[in-house]
Amino acid sequence: MTQVDRAHYAPGDPYTDSPQPIGFGATISAPHMHASACESLLPFLHPSATVLDVGSGSGYLTHVLANLVEPDGKVIGVDHIQGLVDMANENMAKGAEGKKLLDTKRVRFVKADGRLGWREEGPYDAIHVGAAAAEAHSSLIDQLKAPGRMFIPVEEGWSQHIWVIDKKADGRVEKEKLFGVRYVPLTDAPKN
Ligand code: SAH
Image (cartoon, rainbow, N blue to C red; front, side, top):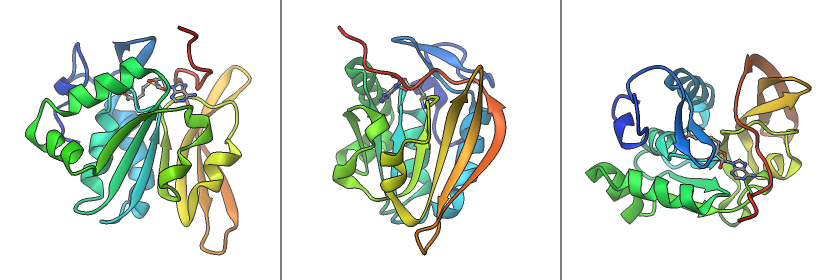
């Protein structure tokens, strides 16, 4: 994470450990949340892994994930707001290393409903979900490799918890509830 300048991705106060607004009703998550996500997914982030980052927003975590799957891995960032897809591309192009990730197509940002995943480039060794889901969407679990791991905040009534969902080598799916969190919700795309 220290290799990716958060100032390229967070418009204000980039070096504090807190979420920051990035426009379009979205926030870049706090560094400690991104660290926790990376730490959890790390066993699956091998040098040629394919990773899906749902709700990629600013693009910061997408960049960190791409560094963790060097040299041949790739990361698809999905967001349902075109303005954020554009912003993530612009943010990443601010640094030479980020620009190279885009040029070599090791990172690609696409506009889509992330609840459905991104079947075109799956299955994925690791899936990160950056917005709170109403459920652990089955299309995302379907797009996990066996073995593979998903890190996903899930809404339960008034609270949200991180779930780590593992698809084992034999295809069995195991779910573990970790800690309470507060994420913006994974929603329908805005109408305009
Ligand atoms: N990981 C990002 C988090 C951004 S906030 C970062 O740290 O910068 C959550 C993001 O999820 C927002 O960008 C929002 O536009 C996106 N989002 C919400 N619902 C979505 C959906 N159904 N499909 C794709 N992206 C969605």
